[in-house]
Length: 356
Image (tube, rainbow, N blue to C red; front, side, top):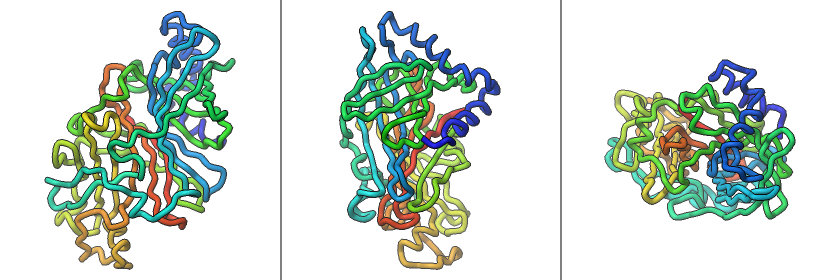
């Protein structure tokens, strides 16, 4: 882990809660939650059986990776409990093929999103019906009250319990941040609750959730220092329009709806009946669509792309965060926009985007 991971997440939470001392005592608070999980010797982490996580790591700036992972815990009667994961992973160093292979159609389209046309894409392996790789392991708690997971492969990761009292729904959720591993995790975050992993919110419910301003995002453009996004996934209620029951798009960036000037194509799609908590985010600036088409430099006054370009734009795997009551609260996300090993063409990242 880098030294930055704790200050970044800490600052975000302190800004929301206003009580730095509470955050410092997050581990103690976690123990209080443990005591509510029956009388098991190894209780559920934070009192919650299911978590969704997004992870980012890798030893070098040309070997970064991103992982989307669900965690299902079973409390133990002895010194350890058990954990099962579903995992989707993408690697800068080992992917093969170009964007036509690594960014795949989800089956969702922009039908009803005039003047937008096209399909919604996602990272290879995350499309509907793809259930990820199953991992098994055990868990325990260290002397600081942190969650320690040991996978059957021998890999380990350690997670801190974060104080969420500053969030309006903080008592109905548990946030965790990875603070150590033996496989080059750099940043990772997760959220746990009582909600089933097979259930999810509809696009209408996600849109009604409003701005997702409590967030963190790290990404690698390839052979470049890690970067951080300073803005939230905002305006779901005010800036996005629902085109059909399974898809919404951001309102067009200018009066004509097609010019590059201020234009951004951003699609969010999913259907909880078939996808559970999985959601697909596909986005691109119109000027990049121009470049994809070989128009470089792009004349913003005449560019008329109404869809994401042929190379698929940015493709993100999202997993919904639901609170204990099953209410949508945000996303954890893993970006995998893989085309070729060059700057800006092999992007991986991890993020969370949550209601304040």
